[in-house]
Amino acid sequence: CLVGSEMCIRDRFGTGSFDHSILVWEFLSKKVGWVCICKILGPESEVKSLDWNPHSNILATCCRDRAIWIFSFNIPNDRKKGTPIEYDCVGVINAHTNDIKRVKWHPTIPMVLFSSSYDNTIIAWAPSSHLLANDAKSFDWVRLFTLSGHSSTVWDFSFSSNGKYLLSCSDDSSIILWHSEFGGKNNKFATFN
Image (cartoon, rainbow, N blue to C red; front, top):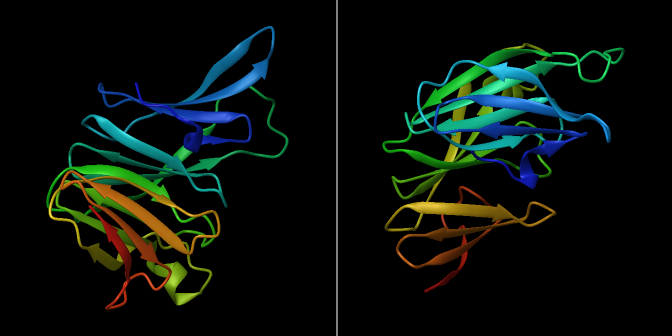
């Protein structure tokens, strides 16, 4: 089972599993504890990572099938706590050339998602409607840029709280500190081996 603090938002958290299930849990009360309010169907392989968007009710997941699955939740304001919630799959991205290890939303830029992979890269994504700055509900996801610099699997990455830096670690025993000019020609700030 996969769970962690980065998956939590507003008394809710998500779990992903080797059996390709994704569950959303909500804290009801001290007496009852946590209850499952949603079982997500879609992925057909092991869930490797999941992350809540800090700006909306959107959950991104990645699976062993090289896909990123993005789900939006309908949570009415008048909803009674503990009652089931509905979801929609608003995107499936298939672009890495190997399994995806991690997905994380940018902490300060809404609707920008990053993924790292066994293909040695980190890729930034956004819905095309976000790039066009219109009100269309298009969730066609496009690649913004690719960070290349590791020579082996990018196991994990983390953003600074202000989103200006990204720190990545790899199976090649290197750590790269990337600066906020992500996607530029000289976006590596420092490499540590």
